[in-house]
Amino acid sequence: MCQLLGMNCNTPTDVTFSFTGFAQRGGNTDHHGDGWGIAFFEGGDCSESDRGLRHFVDHQSAFQSPVAELIRRYPIKSRNVVAHIRKATQGRVALENCHPFVRELWGRYWVFAHNGDLKDFNPRLHGSFRPVGTTDSERAFCWIMQELAKSHASVPSVDELTLTLRELATQISPHGTFNFLLSNGLALWAHASTSLYHVERRHPFTHATLSDEDLSVNFAEQAAPGDRVAVVVTAPLTTNEAWQAFAPGELRVFEGGVLRV
Amino acid sequence: MCQLLGMNCNTPTDVTFSFTGFAQRGGNTDHHGDGWGIAFFEGGDCSESDRGLRHFVDHQSAFQSPVAELIRRYPIKSRNVVAHIRKATQGRVALENCHPFVRELWGRYWVFAHNGDLKDFNPRLHGSFRPVGTTDSERAFCWIMQELAKSHASVPSVDELTLTLRELATQISPHGTFNFLLSNGLALWAHASTSLYHVERRHPFTHATLSDEDLSVNFAEQAAPGDRVAVVVTAPLTTNEAWQAFAPGELRVFEGGVLRV
Figure 1 (cartoon, chains in turn blue, orange):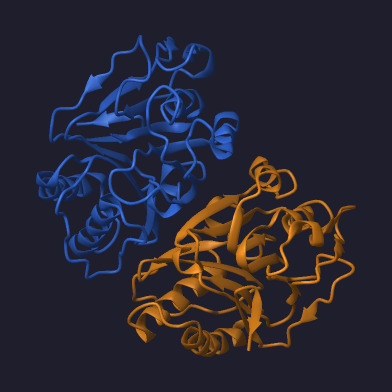
Figure 2: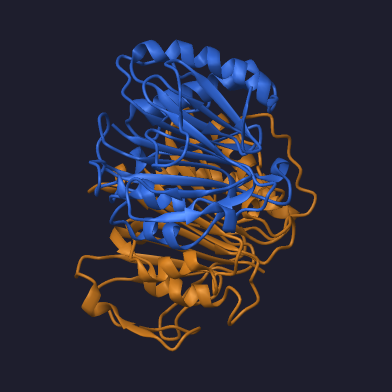
């Protein structure tokens, strides 16, 4: 099974600590050596302008990759991050099959990563989004983008988009396991069919200790009182934080570092 | 003026030597400190399968960027590379305005970088390609992708694509300076309106010395007899190779490391 990591914050925050634990699962503490990827939205002073995107993919394991080493050491600050470590189930080990996938729609980049396996999901792709690789995941992403483009005329509000995504997820889910992360730089959507957890970090910040590596961080020293950070993962990354499990079929939306309800 | 660097080869080759000289122009030997970017197509054993893409952009100068340092040290091998160093003329210094730009069409990634300045180029973008940033360059790229999508039903042959691109370039060129590089992983197209040069490296390989840094390389030690490499740049990178200047308005196509005529 692949591993997902998402982060949504109200101020640009680096993902170094969480990525360090996460990257251990790519070929060291767990068996996911078939590539990995991460995307960071980046922009100006307000989240409205987070239109820029850094996208790193590598078919080497995240544990060994020189690009992953760069991410661990170079603190890229972002309000929306989507990362993925791959265990190939469909599609060969190749760069074009590494998540997250990126497409442009309505003048914004959209980033998608999937954990799971979809059987017999071969929708008609008659629109402008075609898979480059051979995974079920990219096929699902292209279909979602095609349906979003049909449902709205321009970038919809976070609430409207949530309604559309909930409906689309319901149509794909019967085909198998469909845990996914999606972001357009304005919010982070997370859908669980089997396993996803999230934690919210906010004032008063405390110590956190990584499950996968002998490393702890005191967020109280790093974060300002108003900072809010939400982290979503396949399995809890730390041993001493209150990770909240998703229910099967649940879609959660994070904006400004908090769960939107 | 921005700087362009393109490479097209018959076997996956690293761009480390050329990029080292090129990156010096981003904030050291020349004044292009407003960001940079590079894209590498990567795939399997034949160029037909070069569908994967690594895409690095940074709004820091290429001379100082930690990501550029990674590219200089980590020899990523590719048959088609497009790189760009930015001197902002239109659009602010921001990640979303860094070249090269990427879009997907017909299940292939397309990569575009531009050097120049287009005045009053505001075509109607009614198709599926919209700019994310605010540059004239991304606008031109989106229009080219839109027109390609209208002109062909699927990925055309290199020759057909050349005919279409030649016609499209003729329509954009009157708006200003339009030197560009475009690749879909199968070939590299280069269009000059003011300044582009190319060199072909092939057997018997010789020594080459960088203009921008005190570094030389003996390609005879690194390359096999059958290797063919074409490099396209805004201004010659080496002092002792036969760089061939483009004529104004000329579109050259490189495939398998040689100029296609």
